[in-house]
Image (cartoon, rainbow over all chains, first blue to last red; front, side):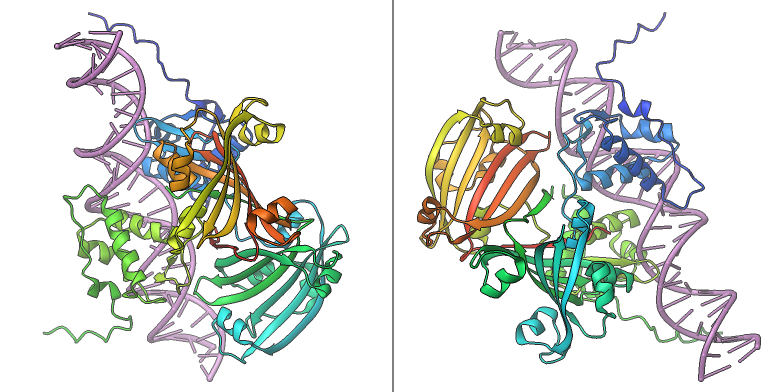
Length: 261
Length: 261
DNA sequence: GCCCGGCATTTGTCCGGACAACCGGACTTC
DNA sequence: GAAGTCCGGTTGTCCGGACAAATGCCGGGC
């Protein structure tokens, strides 16, 4: 008695088959991370087309010589990034693109640089002064204690884009104007060993005052975007309080956000 | 021969000891989820104070009768929410608070309701018309195909807060003005079985036109916040394209964001 | 007194397996 | 023809164990 011929498979061919995935066990990079990077790259360059089903986890694990938990961890990280969607009883699908990045704690400097705008910074003030009540409340320090006050004008293509005013607890890191003109504040903080963790932001709008309009090369009373942000490191300390002004005619906040499942 | 007296423990007492944690194995709720909820509640009400160390995972697992992977999954979900921080060789710490919610795809209606503002909606228009080039591009449909156009005025305490203009592919869900006045658009979508997944947003500012100023009860040329948003469901379809106007004098966007580790 | 190496502690990574819940389609039944 | 039922396939949850890597502390050596 011979087996009946296998019925033609309904399922499409597993698209990860033609991807020559593989991990390097001698590398210090975690296996799940190697895999998630390869999958992300494949999605990025279109080798995994939106909507297509990834072959099932168990088979994929077997093919790569990995365990299922490891493969799941790799897939999960891409689900968290919004690149994949899982459906029980169905499979794992590539999201129909449109996803870029789900909003990071971005530095304006980095944003401009990434957009190829070659940002420029002009430090207008860089002093230490006693904290006002508002600043003290935002930073969680005693009123009157020393804080750095930094005022900068950020330009792109020689045109003013934003007027940035930051307050930073004194003694947290060295802040000379020279370095501030060469890079962004967040980069200096990371370089000083501060691990940024989260931030509270508030974005609004109002009419610019005469002085502000002058700095930003806008007409008097022009609408400007305002952004207030307090940033915390992973110990919960407030490390920065900024209140910034952006030219509404030249700048808007773009971001992607994901729905928490 | 008696054991020498144990040296006094340097470590603080495990704060989870006094928490009477426990899981119900007969419940259909996943164990890791039960645990993460209990921990989150303990943090919320201050039973786990910021900065305190959470006793190690292995001991915690043993005490609860769970395996270490399950406990790790619970902790990981809180790390993802920004409530906890892990440090290898040290332990898991409660973040020094200030964290509320890391920015969800929020409906203005829900936001206002959560703030106890009793939102009110006035539907100004609710028609089906052919898609303009801009709308078609944003929604990924053919130019000229049918889309719902909905214009609403959102009020709180009887005062206008925002002027909302949404475009939705026709046939996606039933949209009668009556239900639109009773609740928010996103709630209607979820009720129609649409799983929201992500959105691309752009927030800017400009001066209001005369007509817009009149609707929002603002003086002519007053600054207004603009928000453009395309929302996608988990199949990657664009399900909504909105361009909204908010009174800058009454409204600002508040959100929390986390640094991706 | 100061520096450095070793040690205990804790989280990070990985494995292999087991069963449950869920989805979709095929099949049966009315 | 329509509705209900069964079944294969897939992800979700959970377990127990093992070793690696990072951190902070203590003691020994200089």
